[in-house]
Length: 259
Image (cartoon, rainbow, N blue to C red; front, top):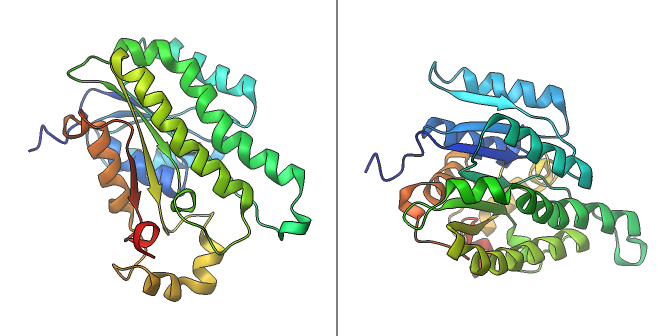
């Protein structure tokens, strides 16, 4: 069982990995044995995350690679940075994202474009740019893995006026399926995680104001913990998840599928 859930010797890139869900995933992967590149647009936050991860043990390998993935040229620069360091990439976690809330009549074009670009366009561009490294890393027995971080807001209708966020995450879920079909024969799996409420910067205000009600609404009666997110990411990245592709896995205590 230890080897079934190990990612020892593998190299991973986690975008938006300096905090929240991205940091939870990065921690799970390094503790399972992977070398992890942590990326976010804030260089200082990247370094802080790497220091936090490195403190977990002498064998931990975590490296900061800042990039603003809302910009096309930065997606390509980050891919080139990885290629300069490694000749293959086993795991790509597309987690960097943004949200925007405003009443329907007032929702700005800038809020639509910012969220759609970062949440949907950037995962496509980065995956595209890293395909040569993913192809080299993958085989039919042990594929390379692309993990897109969607949301339960792409599965059900949220009560919040976050129109571009919901649309971008639903789009990312379907893009996951489209890419899974095309890249499976090339030795690459593509799956999505659809988180519910977790403690993160994006959810901080909501949980502060309504945390008890959010937990009570979940069939499992709590919000997500870091090990909940780490567990599904490690599963999808390890031999345990080698025959899973095109899946969108809710990690939400049952909210997105039962409420």
